[in-house]
Image (cartoon, rainbow, N blue to C red; front, top):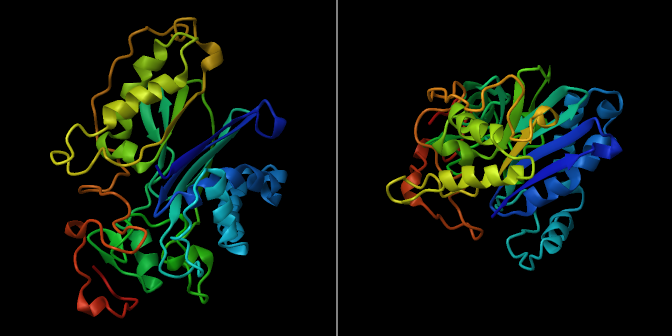
Length: 345
C-alpha cells in the first residue's frame, strides 16, 4: 500500500473549515506519507490562505511540498518512512533527480463557510454528488490530454503507449524529481509537474456528498456509477453506522475477482474518502427530509473527462529499476533516444 489520505475536520481549530485529500503513491510510499504529514501545515502558512484565497493557497502548498522534500532530501523522506515503521531506505538514491522514481498524485479540497476549493495534480479524482448526478470537480492528468502532451514534448520528454518516458501514465505529481531536473524550465513547465488545477465554487442545497479517490477507484467504475453505488447506502445509513463502512463496501466491489480476466484492473492500491455534506440534515435512518428513501440509480455513462482505452497500473518499474510488466511498454523508438521538441509517440 502506497496510498494515504487526510481527513481533517475543524481545520486549524475552525469548526466551519475542513481539509480532505487523497495521495496515491508510486515507486514507494514516502512521498505520499510526506504529503499527508505536511499538507495541512503548509496550507495554513501560505500568504494566499491567510488572505482568504484558499484555492490559491492549495496551489501554493502543492509547490511547497516539492520544495520541502528537496530542502532536506533524503532525510525529509526517511523520517516519514521511519514514522510509518519502515526501515528499508535502500531505494532512496543520494541524488533526488537521479533514476529513482517515487512520487504521488494529490487531490485535495478545503471547505469553509459552504464553499469548496479544489486542487488536483495527477489522475486521482474528486466527484460531487448533486441531486444524484455526478459532477467531476477535477480532471485526470493523463498523457492523452493535448495540453499535457504539449508540455511534455516541449520539455523534451516523450510518450509511448500512453506513458511518460515509457514509465508513468500520469503527468502531474508531487515528487518524481527525475522528471523535474531541467533548470532552464519553471516548475510548472517540467515533464512531470506538481502544478495543480484549482477551482472554487459555492455549495448548493442540492449538493449531497463528495468522493475523493485514487485512480484505482475510477478504473472500474465511472464517476456516475460510483455515485450510484454510494448514494442509496448513504441515504439509508443509520446515524450510528460509520461512513467508512460504505467506503469498505465500495472498495470490496471494485477489487478484481479475476486478475487475468480483468487485465489487472481492480488490483491497484485503492484509497477513497466520502464527505457527507448534509449529515446534519439527515433523519435517523439516513434519509433526507422530503426525499424518498429509495434512491433511483442513474444509467451508467462515460465520464466526459476520462481518457479512452484501458488504464494501467501507474508504475511499471520496481525499486531497483527492473521492468515489472514489459508487455505494457512499447520499446522506445530509436528516433526518441535523444528527445526533441517535436517528438511524438
